[in-house]
Every structure is written in C-alpha cells, then in structure tokens.
Image: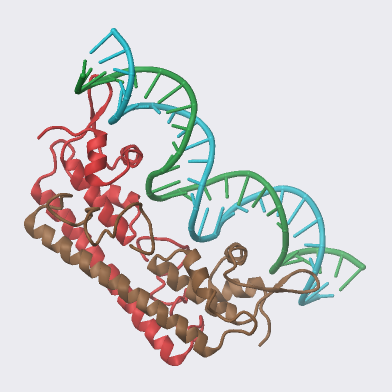
Length: 144
Length: 144
DNA sequence: GGTTGACCTCAACTTTGGTTGAGGTTCTAT
DNA sequence: ATAGAACCTCAACCAAAGTTGAGGTCAACC
C-alpha cells in the first residue's frame, strides 16, 4: 500500500512522466504531495491509466474518459465494483465500435463487387446515409 | 464527364472547401486549373475522397492514405480494377482492426470477471504484452 | 555535507487535420 | 456592364495529446 512517486508510476505504467503531469492537469488522475511538493500516487492510479490506454485504443478522446471517471467515487478510492461497472461500460462501447466496423467492411466488400466506391452509387462515406451519422463535422466520438 | 469546381465537389462529397485545399496540399487529390486559375476536378476525385473518409473512420492517418494512393496510376485516371485493388487492401486493414478490437474486448471481459483491470495482473494495456505491440509511443498506426 | 538523480513549475514547441479571415480575382446572370 | 456569388492565396489560428527545455528544488547515498 505504499504510495508511488511519478517515476515509479511512469515505469510501471509505461507512460512518460510528462504524460502523467498532463493527465493530472486534465483531471484524469490525482496525487497527494509530500512536504517537499513531490507527487505521491495511490495504487488506483495504475487502474486509471489502464483505462485511459484502453480508451485511447478505441479512439475515444481523453475528455470522454474524464466524463466516465466522473462516475467514480471522489472521497474513497474506487471499489472493485466501481471498476467493474466502468469496464462493462467500456465493453459496450467496444462492441458498438466493432459493429460499426463490421458494417463498414460489409459495405466496402459490396463496393468491390460493384466496382464503385463512389460517393453517389455507394452509401459508404456518403454524408447523407445512416452510417455517416449526420456527418456535420469530422471526428465526433458520439456518432462516429 | 464534366469537370467539377471546388464548390461542386464540396457539396457532393460533404467536405469543406478548405479541406479540399488541404488534401491537395497533402497530395491526396489533384486538380487542373482554368485560365482564371480556378480548380477543376475529374470525377475520380469523388472516389478518392470516399477512400479518405473510410480511412479516417478506421483511424488511419492521411499520410497512410497518401502512400496507398501512390499505387494508383499517375498518368491516366484510375480504372475500376485499380480501385478494386485498393478497396481489397482497405478491407484487409479493416479486418485486422476488427480482430484487434475483438481481442481487446475479450480481455476486457475477462478483467471484469477477475475484477482487476490492473497493469500488472491483467495484460490489457500492459506495455510488455503482445497486444500492446512494443508500445514505445502512443498513436502508431502500424503496430496499433 | 556534498553530489547526483529524481523531482518541481512554467512556457514554448510538435503533429495531425483542418478552419477562419483578409485582401483580391473570376464567373455568371441580368 | 455590373452586381453578387464563387473562387484564389497566404497567414494565422484551433484542438488534442502530449514533449522539450530552462531554471530551480528535493532526497538519498556515501
């Protein structure tokens, strides 16, 4: 149950110290300070970082991670159940994402058949269709 | 077979004019110019944009799209077969991506079972493991 | 008790994928 | 022939997700 220094967290999580500072500025992780103003982390920080990394793999922006973390308890360290709930949520997100990609792949395969891959004949990448989800701007996590 | 102006391409592709300029600077699309220096596009530009959008959905950077486009013929407009080859490549990329996400999901599901989601007990998000593919930096398309 | 490595803050810089605006030109319709 | 829409270039700006460096402090070992 010892508290961890930035360097230890950096080594164990495989994340640069500068990234840890950055995550802290963004409110994704917290730290206590020693008398000499150095950071000390509880061990739950490692789980938080694990979640951050998973989220990034799926292409979710850090802001979304922050919102998800807002559901974790603020006073006490998160319990096993808190983490489990969050993991379940992540899994759903992943499933959706996978389904989207499947859909995309099927359409792409269809387009190879017809030889089109055009914006008009093929609904793929067409901003009017359901897959493109409105398409009023690039890079929206929600509707992507 | 009429040539298209930027505005027409923008409307038909659902992409801002500024983005078209940007893609041109990056070498992803080409244009001819009128006597008055205005851009005119061949209709294959719409397919190029479709491919760009698909690539972005999958999280591929534009630079990778540029490399893929380098395989398209430079003198003549790309044939149906040229596009089909590119689509097939894209489909493989998508399949890999889907497989990765499946793998990730399975691990995440496992972690809910064990209640861990920790950097040590669980290989998920652990930089040492196979899934993380070396993990020497965030955001690498190749090994992601 | 000193030196070396780990740590601190703050500001500036990087990359990707664009957008916005200024200042000027061209095209089209009446 | 002229108004207005669409186009041009170029430079500056934006956001995300950090990294890099300057200048200074802390801590741990010998």
